[in-house]
Image 1 (tube, rainbow, N blue to C red):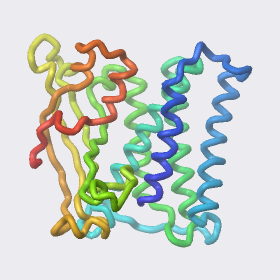
Image 2 (image 1 turned 135 degrees about the vertical axis):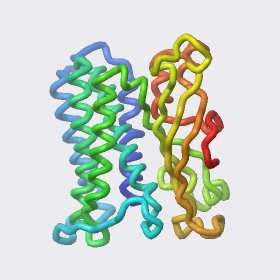
Image 3 (image 1 turned 90 degrees about the horizontal axis):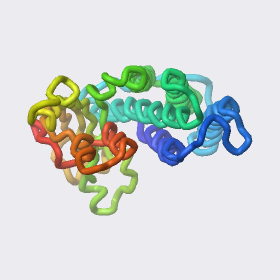
Image 4 (image 1 turned 180 degrees about the horizontal axis):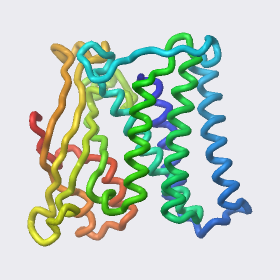
Amino acid sequence: MLFKSSVLSIALLLMAPLAMAREPGGETHGWSREQKTWALNLAIVGGVTAYGMAVWDWGESSFGTQNEGWFGRDTEHGGADKLGHAYAGTATTALAAALYRRWGYDDAEAARLGAFSGLLLTTTVELGDGFSPEHGFSWEDQVVNLAGVGLEYLRQRHPAWRERVQFRWEYWPSPIVRRGRHHDIFTDYSGSRWLLAFPLNAWGAQGNALRWVELQAGYGSRGFAERDRDFFDEPRRHPFIGIGLHVPLALERLGAGPASRRWFEYIQVPGTALPLPP
């Protein structure tokens, strides 16, 4: 749902500068890494719960569920919201794991704790929805939350697979955003698509020209939101395959550092791939 994606996106924006900040080790500002871990996860639960009760009417009904469907034509967003949830789980896990590493945890501990924080945030949102009179707990959303967190946990634990499989969000503003009638890019599903990228450089093509190439498979939807109806003749689902430039490798050759290149494991630059259909 739209509002769920918004709060997850807010959390990502808040965690990103923390994850990128330089930390000298496990002790900072008088707090041990364990104390910071507790503080982060308590803040996730407390902050999301307080916001949900204040804005989304959490706690005003008994617990309920709803069936949102998956990727059918008769769903609210053609399934794009499901991939948005999965991506939020992935990105939250990645940022949290980076933050834990800054605090002095080793890679295995950071991956485990990152997955815990990612699942904690997404599950808190979903459980809170269960007590909302307007919404309800969605098993479909919780399944894709878990899938996104699980994928990133595996990538964090196995560096070779982190290079081989990357889950990305590509965004180009839809007409309604370009015309100033909608301002939340995270809920602009008609301008978004999500994809799995498979860089050939990590699949044995290091020594030839194919190292610059990656294969892709993805999905998006167009025109499902009522506000988009002026710009699309009918709602369309958009599965695609594609071939593109492996941007992290290009940035490495241009002298970009590892931290800068990591962002492009999660963000697809528009215009750097040829999707079929377009």
